[in-house]
Image (cartoon, rainbow, N blue to C red; front, side):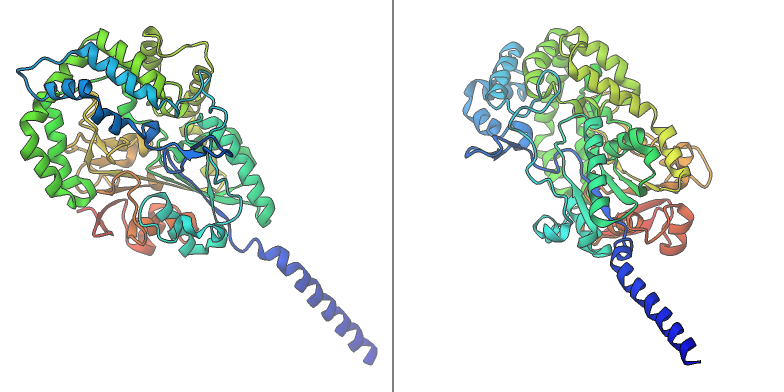
Length: 495
């Protein structure tokens, strides 16, 4: 009997020791690491890295542009002429002066092959969790850093990571870097899978990642927030779809009174409209005539835009899929794009990724990935192209961000009916790639997700697995429908 008890005691002790030894290894699996992938401009890029002259490249490379502009009497004089119909602006002189000003700070552009210039890039490439980088998110109130803060609140900062990259480079290169990053995080944490949150351009990065690496099956959840997966219609300017009118510009300013930031800036836009309506109208009339002259457009693109941002692949990759062929044709014709260059090879590759998005995202969802797409609406498009009357989040068109929703023009309503149609008759989600995994938030402008707001909490909880990424589960747990409106940082179902 004693012998039997000893054997049993030894067996139990052995089991306890094995469990206690194994616990640290398995403990790493208790939380799935969440990786935030930011959008264009959300992470600073630097020049002269590692030298005494290291400095951030600010304002799209135009750090000194405003100062130089105000000191250039010739440019100021030509600009002022736009505001007075009795004076005639010298188009050629204006373009040449702008070209000189932009040329002074020509540091943000990539090489002719679309590569980041030597000595430039990011300096905050972190492979340790955000618990080690509290300054990035601790006091963040809005945008990607606020989402990071919310993620930290949901699952703890030790389980949240931020993938920082140079947003100028082509998206497929960034996706390759993200793959290496995921490998590193998995190795460090012992996790078999990670969850991803792709914001704005970061959504395009996630798209490119799934295109190349979906068979690795190492993603648990993927949340796309105001994603640039389908492009941005204002980038149709590359296809020479440039249209400016007095009516559209004034309508845009008027719409901003109520749509921008939930109407909190109403007074500012109202003053702009009242005090500057005539002058703005004169300027719009001038610009309308300006863009109709092919010689002006060619000179503007080649002398001003090409040296400044013409070789940045990520900007090219924001061209909507349906506008790509025309954009390549038009930009090649005027000498803005060289089809033998590395830039063209890069954007052509990503164009293929755009075309495969529907197939790819359905494939990863079938694998069990919790996919969620969050798109905003309620703001008129930027009045620079024929698509100014689109519903947007103030930058990205809702139809593109949602991967296929049928959307009414700004100020209009749809005639459609059904469970996927918003109560305000603006959105029909039935045509989305994933209609049961896509949400729409009215009056949250592009990446203006505030910390501890209901919208930001929803993003974080979807990413952290607090709720399954489908309409039914979210409705059951939080009472949120597919169409939401944010007021005072609280979400309500659209009525």
